[in-house]
Amino acid sequence: MSARIIHAIEALSEWSGKIFAWLILPISLITFGEVILRYFFNSPTIWSGELIGYLFGVMTFMSGAYCLRYEQHIRLDLFRGRLGSHGKALLDIATSSFTYLFLIMLIWQGGALAWDSTQTLLTSGTVWNPPYWPFTWFLPLGALLVALQELNNLFKNIFILTGKEVSS
Image (cartoon, rainbow, N blue to C red; front, side, top):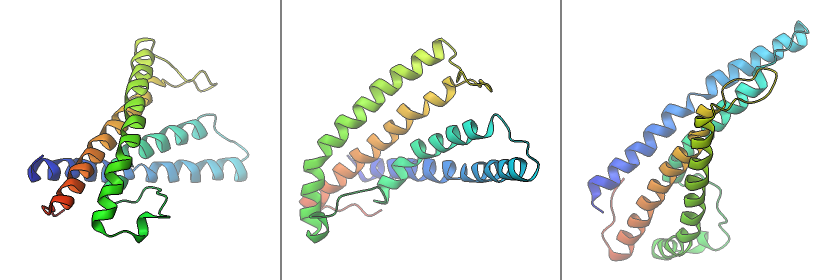
């Protein structure tokens, strides 16, 4: 994998994280509005909790690659923190197969869910009953972005081991 491809994937991870992070604003505004309506006017909405959940899910799924790019995801650092760059690269390469298995399942099963829900134009089934099917596509799409970034990290780790580090 060339440095150009690595930088392109990192730019995609960067873009997705920064764009979808902005969803925190409507989430916060809707939450604030719901609190005002509920506690000051005793007039809660039927849609705010559901929409907040959908937007938060989209933000989370689409920001995963960004978090992985900057190593901001949850990681058990019991052993890894004590290793040098070569040791960390070896450990990351060894454990990446588990990550790929998980991501393949998310893409495969999430894609099947998204496809089925799109064909049936699935709705939430709640009192508000918005279309649910568009939100289902963010799971396999987000997993695909994470898989690309994980592949990127794999090649960067290989480059570390071979002495050909790629600057970010």
